[in-house]
Image (cartoon, each protein chain N blue to C red):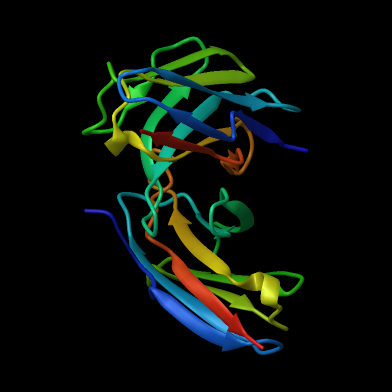
Length: 109
Length: 116
């Protein structure tokens, strides 16, 4: 079957760094997306990895290891507005996104 | 670019009535559109995938006669919830993508449906 595993909730301090891990099992693989979703809003795109390695984009970086079925999202210099859910979504062989419940990130002052 | 709109953003309807939700890609042609439903604190649940000019493909467990999807053009898809019941109350989100991209899905802002 297809499965996504992320921590349900994480807490971090404003200005700090946090790493959100994701392991996945899919039928085929065509890349992995990270989305941010604030409460009551639709997801917004953060990153896309299809090759192994680290992709850096400003304060956010995303890493992928296809052989391990593993990805992480790294958030630096945390701001209060980063409080949201972070969704790891791999794409299967049919180019369908597989969604987990996401990780709720709470930022404290 | 790649903006997707949804209308309405919120709707309240009475049990037994039907509600139509529109999803539009504003600045690109969407070869594929997706409809999701999300209950509080749960993951996005894909309801159906639609390609322009063809019938939607529904996920297992989603009633096609209850959730009517029409993808009449490359910029518009509609979801009609027929004979709505309180258990249909949810957050409905559409997304769109175009071919030749990284298969990124661009999401609309969502529609909050409340059935009384």
